[in-house]
Image 1 (spheres, helix red, strand yellow):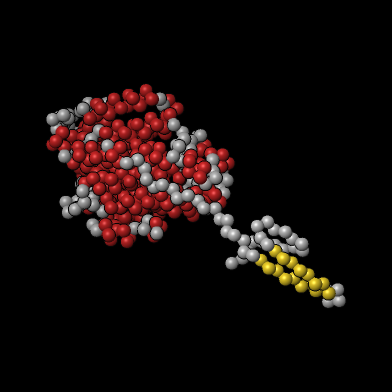
Image 2: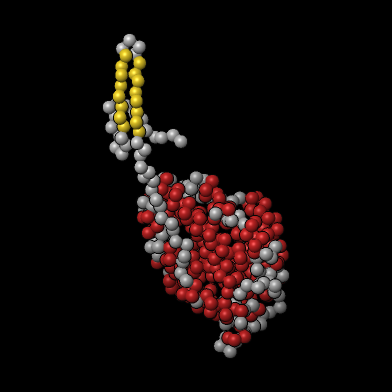
Length: 393
């Protein structure tokens, strides 16, 4: 090990004790030095361990959602099933439009859905399209016109979808999906609430606040998807455990999106990193806006990445318990989002001026691996194969 110090005659180094004696022989021109160095006490900065705990799921009423989606007969008296009638071929056109949108904007996910039954494929495409349209209200080309009133109208439109009164063809696909699968409206309403947060909030005080945002905009997608993807008949785990895992996948995905887009979000005046955690590592918004990757930033990012991987690890338990034909897109998401985290590391933790990217060719190369993992039912086997297993040791 090399010690970072230099010696000079009569030197005085704060924090160390150095004794220097010289005997000079003019004839030989030799300087002999005897140095006694008392080891300098270690003064390494001890960084805090970031909390991985978000908001208790009970506070989000996830259990209520699970009960309504796994035991729909108990609630059928309060929410009567409505299956609207459409002209011949209308629904086929509606689902085909959803398929094209999914294939265009979520190519890898779309390929992963192709093993699912036709009924499940169409339902997942309809859910994807509704989520995408909801997200684009805030992040799309018309986001400058966004207001809470617009989102309130969008929520009214959601209630019409669930009541069998779709506004357009894409809404009709979701209306039909709701009549085919036991979908609860709460995750959809919660996603809209997440969009409302984006209109009034650009900073997050702590991880609990950020976790709530991640639940709203991404964890909800997992709760929407489980009734469509189905739980394997041979699964011995409680449905609640599988729904929790689906929610955690959404949390991990959104945390990864946030880490990938730090620089891009900063250019819009947004910081999605917990303010108290930035301060704990000696950082602030100013460091983000400067675009300079410091050692403090690197250490901070290592902790943030580790937390995202923690949630992906939790999600694996549920991925292995879904219906076999539905596991492929879930495992594709787990692996590809894990590679985004790897790319941030490969970029030297520079997510301030560089955007971590996983190319399309590389994504396609991961599909066979995701397919292989989707074939195994044993969570124990999946854990050994997990891309996050070694990273969390």
